[in-house]
Length: 206
Ligand SMILES: [Zn+2]
Image (cartoon, rainbow, N blue to C red; front, side, top):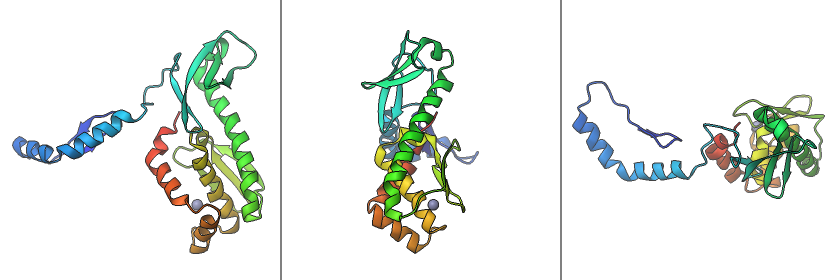
């Protein structure tokens, strides 16, 4: 039995299961189902992106409306809680919004890496952005760090956790006890942030 992100209840049973039995199980699980349906209803729905006026987009953990303006100064700009897109850039909205996200992601992730690199006393040889779905970061043997640009949609403390996670790999190229001790020493609350990503990572999508 699953409740999808769209708020659909899917019940699977062996082909010969009598219908009254299925109904009985659903009734018995009704509290759980209601709880899950409520959860699904309170989640932002990003399945059908329309790129329309007023549509909400995540940026550093908050949702901001998109607004189309007649202005050719810049394709996409974030000013006073609104994401402005020029009417020209709007013709290719998805590509231009992703480009804006990537520019912001690189800026913020570079800054945060700089900030936390003192804690491990090491600097990455390079910082690059990746677009791999469901992979938030990686650290190569030569000290190069890759970050998923979608992290710019997450709250800053979540983005910071990935920065610390990858920086700590500069010292330990594994997930050993020493590695996690180092992460803990920099960010004692790292576990709750990892949990947040597991639960909400699917919201950071485009
Ligand atoms: Zn790791």
